[in-house]
Length: 359
Ligand SMILES: Nc1nc2c(c(=O)[nH]1)N[C@H]1C(S)=C(S)[C@@H](COP(=O)(O)O)O[C@H]1N2
Ligand SMILES: [Mo]
Image 1: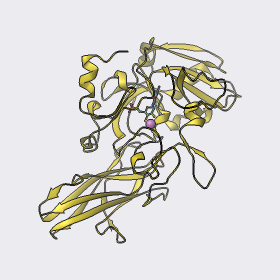
Image 2 (image 1 turned 180 degrees about the vertical axis):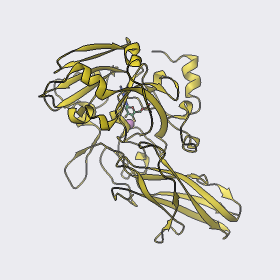
Image 3 (image 1 turned 45 degrees about the vertical axis):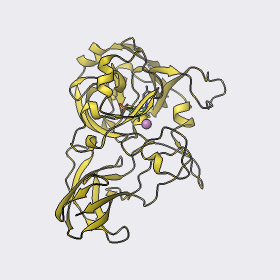
Image 4 (image 1 turned 90 degrees about the vertical axis):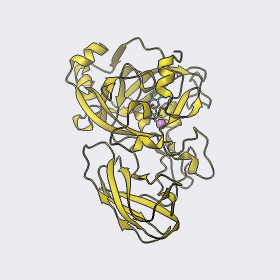
């Protein structure tokens, strides 16, 4: 698919980090409001934009194979959810030694309102076999992949983007996984997976397969480049683990990093989220060490997106200050001081440090 003027305009507000395949961070403004506008939502694609024939095939170990169109999905009950998507590689640039992979700063995270059909309702129509294990999701995008495939018989020059979830999760009504066809009230654009994509709440966004083309119920555990090759935490000192839910994380959105503010009381604002559930505590430190002060945290306005927090900072001392913020989620997970290093640079949720000058 070529880059039309319309697509070029849609991309103009982002900070490009790779022209081909197109990958771009959100600008800091994307984190200011509760919902990120589509123009400000980050984009992460492993291959060039694909053509999509408008159909979704559902097959494999099912009683009733299906071919669905956008109209078929629209005819099903529609559900809307605001969902924070964060790339597992977000924050990779702060890891040392620097891992290979897209050089994401800290803005491969955004929150949009998605509308679509529930995956579990689509699967129910296809009637998965009782011996189903995983559900495989294939995007229409494919191409040469720069790294050695995990499977010896994989054609390195024509890999497709494929991910899987356990059938128990995919078929669980409580998981609320969407096959989304609208983003912020509009049909999906080319960069975000038109005509439809998966949206898997709570998970790092790699699970949310764009340009969804096929769904297959498998009777064996899925093995693939984007499942067991990449998107694995390869730790220095313990066995590898798959990338799954988003780690707890807080961000300072105001004041901006490196900004100058007048002496006085300043309300610091930010966002916090966790794939494990609601955030239960946000704390701010003004000294660069020790002493954490409780920030005021707004209750979640939905189950799958970031929460707002604020802190009244008595910024009376002239000079340079450091602000740090740390979130804890309801499951008791707390952000580490130092990025949790792993070879491919996933899941960095280290405490953010922002420098501000008070004048
Ligand atoms: N088909 C397909 N789906 C995909 C990807 C991809 O390369 N191909 N990238 C994944 C990754 S790594 C991320 S972070 C999200 C990004 O979604 P966005 O571009 O809408 O922000 O899409 C996921 N879904
Ligand atoms: Mo990602």
